[in-house]
Image 1 (tube, rainbow, N blue to C red):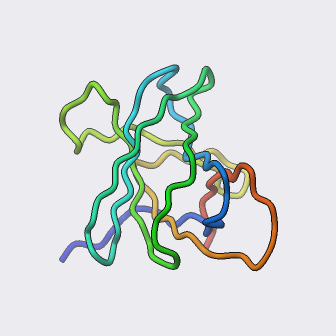
Image 2: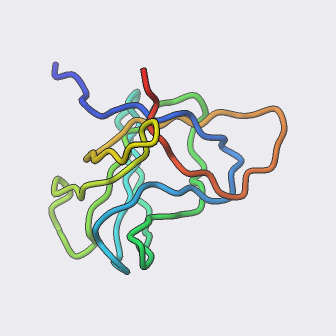
Length: 123
């Protein structure tokens, strides 16, 4: 069995309105964002469009709490799901390029979270 080489992102609150997935070199491009449960293998696909800076943002998906998801994206015109686009995320103030990352949703006790930016977790 192969080990997953996707870096781990910091958990995000499930009650956030929107989730900034990552930045990519694709500008104003339709993309698919995939969330694959690492425990069940179930794959969820969401549509998004990158903005003029290449940022991928989408409404926070309603997925299981405290479950890790492998997150990656593809260009919608590419029919091969394995052709992942490079995602750029912050790791301690440094832009880091990855093809995927592991994300977990948690349930905070209180707070207002209109937009959450995913950042990598330094171990």
